[in-house]
Length: 201
Image (cartoon, rainbow, N blue to C red; front, side, top):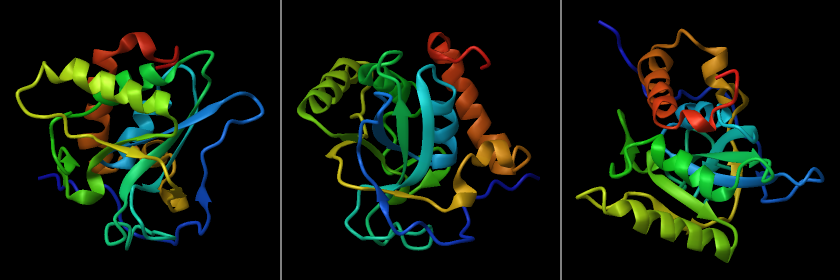
C-alpha cells in the first residue's frame, strides 16, 4: 500500500523578508495565486509559456514571518509567486491556467490537502486585475452547480517558503505525494490546456 503524505514537512526556517509586487527591469510582472499544495501549483505554472519563474511561499494572512510550522495559525495559505513576461502571456491567460488546474468548487483545499492552509485565493494588485478575476469567475460559474471556491483578495505580502520547498517536484521525483498527487494534477492540466505549454512540456 502506498501512503500519500501531506504536501510538506518542516525542515528549516522561512526567509524573514516578504517578496513584494514589482515589475522588473526586463518588464516582467508577478502574479500571486493560492490553489492547494504549492508543490503542485508551482510545477503547473512552470510548464506554461511566458512564465519566467515560480516561487513557493505563504500569503493571504496577517502574521509576519510565517514558516511551514505556523503559517496556518497566522492565517496564510500556501501560495506561489508567478513571474511572467506580459509580452508572451497576459494576466487573463494566467487565470485560465489557474482554473484549468484545480477543482474550482472545492472549499478549503485541493484533492487530499484539506484545511484553510490549502484554500484557493486569487490575489489582485490593481483594479484591472480585480475586474479580470471577477469577470472570469462570472464567466465560468454557469458551468458549475456549486459556487467557485476561490477568494478574491487584494495582495499584501508574499513570504518565500523554506528552500527545500522550491522546485520540489524536480528535486524529489520519487516522492509518493509527487507521483500520486502532483503529477496526475499536472498531467490533467496539460490535457486541458496544451496550447499554453512550453515546447519541452
